[in-house]
Image 1 (cartoon, rainbow over the protein chains, first blue to last red):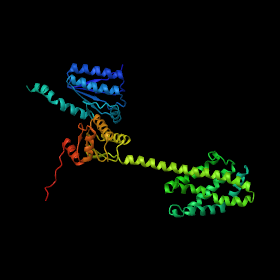
Image 2 (cartoon, each protein chain N blue to C red):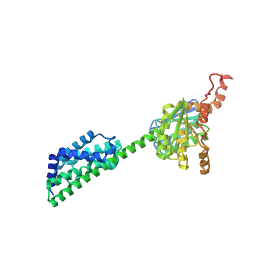
Image 3 (cartoon, chains in turn yellow, green):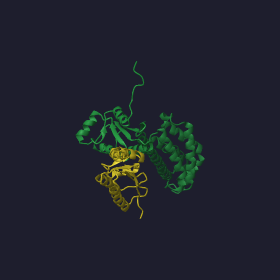
Image 4 (tube, rainbow over the protein chains, first blue to last red):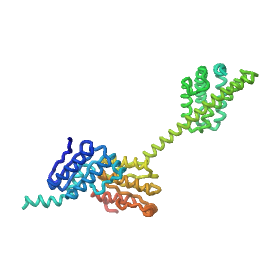
Length: 131
Length: 288
């Protein structure tokens, strides 16, 4: 079965969706991501959906749920690179993903995550070597 | 009955020049005040072509059904003429006159030919009248169609013209909306705004509604949709140009715009946008 890879970059988990999301894949991602957050203690999750052309209400809800679940596990989620057509579809479906952070591209998303979790991680990591 | 076709094609062949001259005179009279729109030479050329094509079609013997393939050239020619006239600004009646004015000269010559046989004359007249009426109605139909095409094209152009997305600064877009916001226009505005956000990588868009005459619940909902869609892509929206009356209406209608940054003027919105982008505007030199 195909799987969506979850990459770890320091304090941040990086998910790039490059295939068509079907329902089971979305559930697998939700499962895998929450497990990984708990395992690694990551504070940020970046989901890149720039290659996603088609969404339905289910995928929209999964995205929203993932973000909520991550925040319960103390991680901030940013969804980046949404296509115009996808954005319009989600709005027409009445899913405006309230509470989900969004950014134009991966770079901006990373900046945003660093700004949110930066202070926390700096305290933890930078404090070590200096002492 | 069957000899009307022969009779008509004979008439058209024998009296071609006279028919044309009389027909042109007839047309020029009815179009006397439109001489600025069409030249007599053009009228003559069109008349000549039409008479020739009509003769060919009549020779086929099929006088009752002008939708047949024998009438294709005639219909095409008439379509071209009425399309041209619709664009030149003729009225529908003036356009239909092109065909109807042929009746008088044609009937005059027919009478001369047939002579005193009243019954035959009446039969011929009836067939020819029906035929010319059909052709006349055809021109009106085409006229109507081409006018509709013009209207449709203008609507399309209006839609495109009235929804520009302007780049104000690096990372700052502006959408000046002018005219009523309905679903179709919102869709276009939304699409072009989102595409522009992707193309320019802008994080801020100012939607200016100074030119929107009225804002009702539906319009507000459309605006909110556009803002939500932009937010999903990672861009923030500011709505500006809200006139006092519109502010009053929005509150009276109970529309909730508190989730969106709103400003009274475009200038205010631009100032906020610059601030968020970390830019300041200052005077280059102290005022003398």
